Length: 527
Image (cartoon, rainbow, N blue to C red; front, side, top):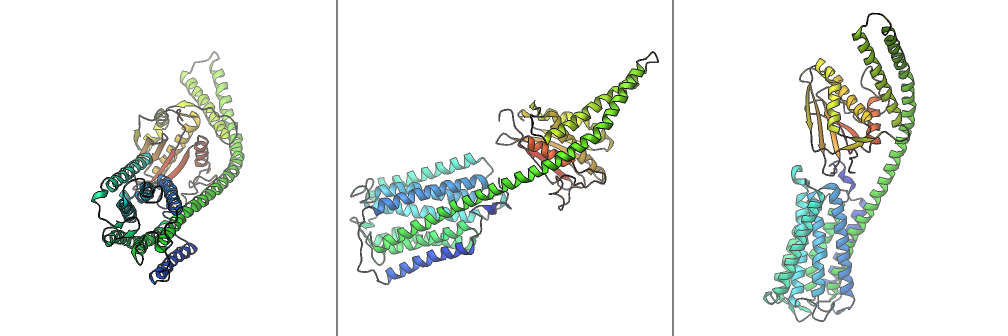
């Protein structure tokens, strides 16, 4: 889920620019100018009548426009998990679906008397269409300012979208059935095929105007984003639409009838165009960010290769000396002299430790080389337990309590066992060093968990001195260290190891003190 400080990159939270505000104002003023000219009687003597292709073209364009807009908004919901975005996406889907029976019921679109329902069915579907979208727009505006715990969807994206689509389809089907099956019971708001009666004002016009004005007021009070701005414009068309449909010419296919539908199509089309434009712009930003990150990583890898080569050269020499001395000691002890078994055991431990240190150093160098790594299937929980056993003496020495929460449902992952253990050892060792510098309770928490998408995450938390805000973004940089005797390579190497395993390593503050290091998105065997 995208974090609140990051969601300004999407349309539902992106602030409108001055140019976009002027464009919206121009559209509203144009609609008002047309409204004034029609109401003032400038077009009183002009009645275009039914233009055959207009209704099919208008309806098809509206259905396609609303459906694509709904799909784009559902895509934004999959990123944001915002309930408000889900509401307005459902509103556009509702429009797209209810326009289909409305289109089929309009007299003259496909048949002289419409393909379904009767003359009153068209007005009923028109009423449900405008009321439904206005109510969902109000729900969208009100949902944006609820408590954070209720603002975001906590379940899966598929579940939310499935429920939304199912409820919308059910609502449209029920309203369509009521409009068609109950047509004989509906008030006569259309006489014949053209004229609107006075009942239309009370049963259709007034409810649409009042509900649309309520949505307009709520949006205006809570407007912050580019999407809010254009929803305000659409609600203006919803307010003007029923007024011009009846006054000054109550006949269908009047100048006002054509005008409001043209402006409604234009306003809805602008939302779609803006969505597509912002999607393209965000995609371009993403491509630029990926390229910049790739260049940065290449530069970091080149530097890291040189540093790792230097470390390997400088450290392996004394390690080789340890191994050579230990071998010599064993040979001397094997001569016909007293057999000091304990000394031989100690020498063997030196040899084993030396070989293991050399393997670790070689593992560091492979991070920065484009070559096959020794990947195998392994259990991260077992690796955590093994690592805790390796550092248990340091934990006991500094009286550190260990809390391990390991999810037994964790899948097997593929990776280099030595490298991943190196990451855990480094993170736990840093945690120990951090806690030895403070008084109070010393608790090391190691947790494993599985995400909904199948990826796993390991967390190492401590109650140490923590990481200063000024250092949180620099601790993974090569050669940067907060320790007096540190080399500044440990965390940088850890991040490189995790990234080489298609994962991510990051740090965050712990509560009430200390730091938490997470690494996640490790490849699973089933991936």
